[in-house]
Image 1 (cartoon, rainbow, N blue to C red):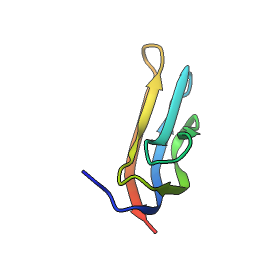
Image 2: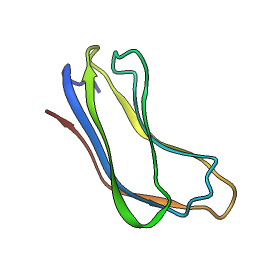
Image 3: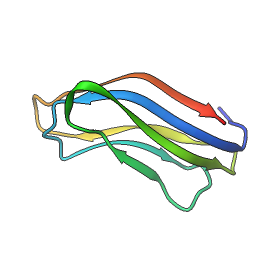
Image 4: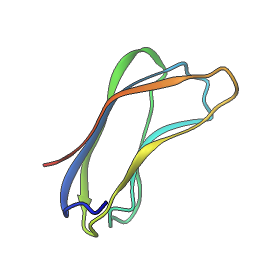
Length: 85
């Protein structure tokens, strides 16, 4: 789905067992020079992760979560938002 060009913020409340090889929250393919990546903290209580200043110049954006972990690790996400400012 196309999005309007402009500045966006991507937020979520997350928690994680830790022990991940990689556990990230990201914004990509928005017309910027590179991806914006935030590590998800290892915590049993929810913490907010935020990516600010996402400047969409090509009418699209890919946002998401990516994890690589051994068996038995977990994470949860809640109240995920992509907001045009």
